[in-house]
Image (cartoon, rainbow, N blue to C red; front, side):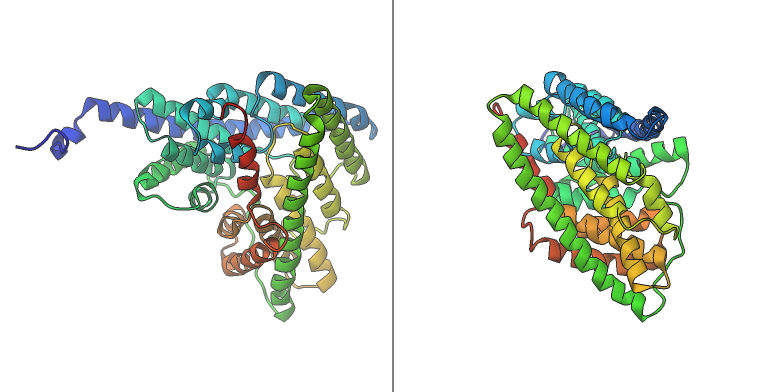
Length: 428
């Protein structure tokens, strides 16, 4: 007699409860893809709204700081835990108890994350939507798991995070690699099915709505001569160093700001947001508006071989740092890629390389790997985003060098270090 603990295969196939779980899970994965695409479209419109507000170059000096203050206040008052990227929240939630986890990955938080990220972009913040999409995706999959009676919360968070990256960039392979390398730091066989199905369904939803596209278009750039290959080492070292410095400064500054804010949380947090907004506005004015928002336009132009001003990379670095410290919701993915593109552009100009667009991609991979310390993710995501099939090996090499150099400045991954803040919160 077969025990009920080991039902026959046909019983598993026709089990009503299991089909309910499957359908709800599939629906959640499709929802992540649809919401990711709609979020991307809304982010584009929010950035355009900001440019409409710039009727005079000095307007952001008033609008951006006030917008930062309002966004920080709404986040603290109505959506606590929504601040920053969203990836640290998803990482932290995997190790928290259900009650504490729901405070970081609820549908309410997902709504607030989307709303306030769009709000930040509408006021010129140097933020991206990709990290927030990870938190939103994890929240949706966790909610669908509860609705369908699934108990594998850690696997659902991992699957939702991967689906979020896949939907945000239309990069399914990068979504899987990101979940393994950055979110989980290990690949659990029992969650592999959830992960793959969620990414596939989110990707199908994205393809159905916007078609098969590359975030930075398609490039045929490749390394041609010796000086181009020398640039791999230069980009790896400089990109990794700058990325590691960004991560180290972010953690150091947040610790100091947190200590200063603690005695008067609301009042001082709003003052910090005001100062950070002013810094972002000043960087925008000095760059002619190039550092506002995600930096996508400048990065794509650099990939296509159009030289950018040398001051773009350092000003975007400062604007992204200020946006990160301000306490408003917003991600690091796109701004980091923009800083890396600016750095690659400088290196290409100094070395007089033959394939400037290829060196820009190397700068992006090295700097991004230096910031997040996930070199495989960096190489895969940039190769997918630019359809640069001939650059996969050089991108991986630059990312690995960048990762190694970054660890000389910051030993722990930025996202994992930031996740400690959410694990240590009262009630967690």
